[in-house]
Image (tube, rainbow, N blue to C red; front, side, top):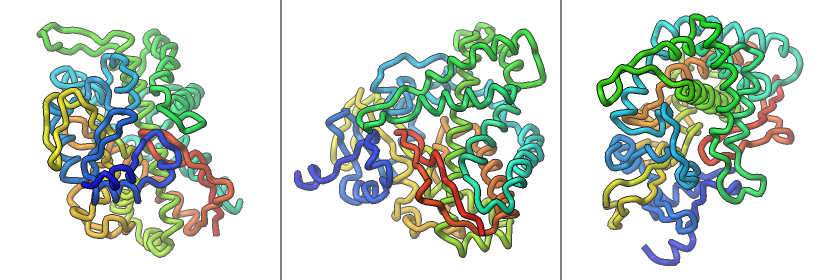
Length: 398
């Protein structure tokens, strides 16, 4: 690898200009510099599928306990207990098992008619209006409503929580440097958790407040209030942000591929695979980060123990070495897996809910609006280093 190429390729996840469309750069990194080094922030990056997937699985070498996003690792804050995305075994396994009870098949089945009803109530008044906003009218609200149903969060508190978490993830206005950690929004949950402790109900928060578990030292414990707040914040943040982005990307990509959109309108049975392709092609959370625990070799170079490794799963999802026509959006693509929900022990617990919400949202939109064009003059892309998508995506309906 020549020095000239090294100087030419520059990847910075905090750079808004790069974030607008990072895929050409990520393709160059896959092809020319599959192990990339950023000296400004002191991290390495992997972009090929056959590098990223094994690293996501190898939790002993690439740990999450000091943060699973670059900005959190750089901030150096200790991770709150219960933040399972940023924990390692054995503590991770104990805390994850408590949350796994949220996403049972029974609970997902019970949510489907409620989510569909919400979509209908939201979209029906917009029929005949000439357009709607995939984010402002649907994507910003439906995921939080679904998570709120699981958690028991009253509707009048859901929006404040969503806005607080969303604001904590945004890049600075000048696009220079990391954002806030995103944890600030969790403080808004304290009053709700305390209220729920005094007003128990048939919901997850009540379950968490009463749950007992065996800790790593063999003692039986209950979660602290702070741990419950962390759990609820994690679900409210992760469950809302990524699904909002998924819905937005569905609107954009199908506007750009009207033939595929027409197929989906005519044959809703294709919707599950279409959602998988949206997830693969535009990963809502395309960049992860880890700390390396021992010296490892990648592409002839040594990454030292203690170094930061950025795993660009959004780039790996388009790797032509694994995905035939990886840079092309096609709802008929067939493949074994993509990495948009992660891989290994941190595989997204809420993947089934995100898929359910994405499928229902798109199906209900297509029932009422089989064709649309994006109103680019009023669209606005969101910019964070960990999730990609839209703040506004208004469309003209036909």
